[in-house]
Amino acid sequence: MEDKDKKSVLEVLLFLSGEPFLPSAIKDIVELPETEIKRLIDELMAEYRERNAGLLIVEIANGYQMVTNPEYAEWVKKFRSTHISSRLSVPALETLAIIAYKQPIIRSEIEQLRGVNADSAIKTLLDKRLIKIMGRKEVPGRPFLYGTTREFLQYFGLKDLTELPTLKDLVREEAA
Image (cartoon, rainbow, N blue to C red; front, side):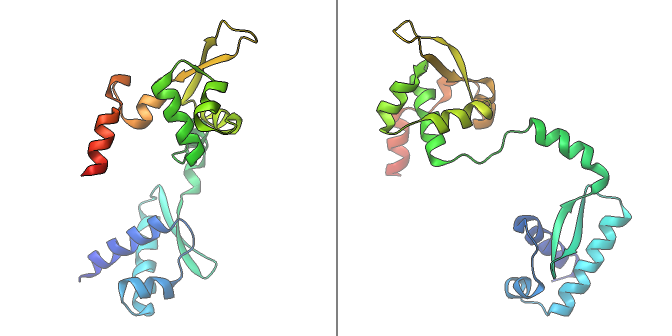
C-alpha cells in the first residue's frame, strides 16, 4: 500500500474515532509499525495546517484526534445552535413513530400505546423540532395535540407522510 493510501486509511480511522486514538490501537488495525504511523500522521497534520483546513489532526492525551479548526469556531457555534442531533433514544423513536402514524394525538393516547410515561420523549422531540403542538383536543382538560414537523420529514428523507412505510412494507422487510 502506498503512503497516500495509508494516510487515507488513517484519516478515516481518526474521523470515525471521535476521541484520541492511541498509535498502539491504530497499529492493531492497520498492521503498520508505530513509527510509520507516527510519521504518516505527522505528515497529515502538516498537510492540514498548510492548507488551513476546516479540520485538523492534533496530538491529545498521547493519541491523535481529528478536531475542527479553531479559526472556524464561529461557524461551528452557528451550526450547533441550529442542527438537530442525529441521536434519538429508543423511547423517543417509539414515541415519534406513534405520533407520525396516529397524528394528531394527545399525550395520554401515546402513553396508552407505549404503556409508559412519555413526558421526557415528547420534550426531546419538541426540543429537536421533530414534533409540534398542533392545537388542543376538545375534551376536558383540553390536552395538546401533537404532530410531526417539516424537520421530521427532512430528518427521515420523506417528501410527505404518505411515504411512511406501511405495516405491510415493514412485515415484508422483516421476512426478507
